[in-house]
Image 1 (tube, one colour):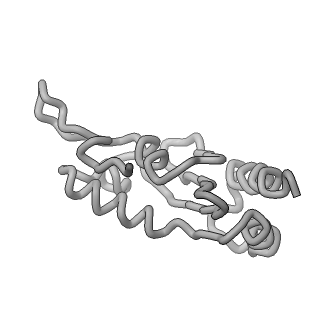
Image 2 (cartoon, one colour):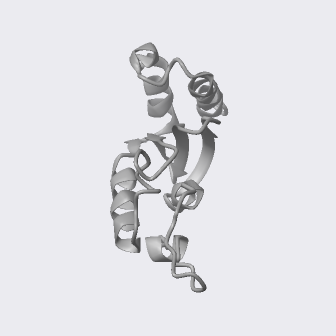
Length: 136
């Protein structure tokens, strides 16, 4: 069962504050995570690889360091977080199989992507290729 934003990011009952800032619960709520790499900086990107039966999903998104430049930190209610969750979930690129995902990972123009210059992205792609190529 998929959890809602209210379940993942409850309002603090003591203070009444609503300040979600960690994408991890959201990422994990989208399905079984095979691989998750986050750029370790004050702002950056997250790359995730999912498995759903025989399907493989790929998610990439950027985040910021404050409510002015980060979508999650800018949310002030569970409804706003739910909209963000829905947008990110819908942006997952699904492949029908490991073979199809590996083909895409091997032929995609990674160097043309805005995040390719980050070593974390290159490490994610290398690790994803290994995971997708295993067992063939």
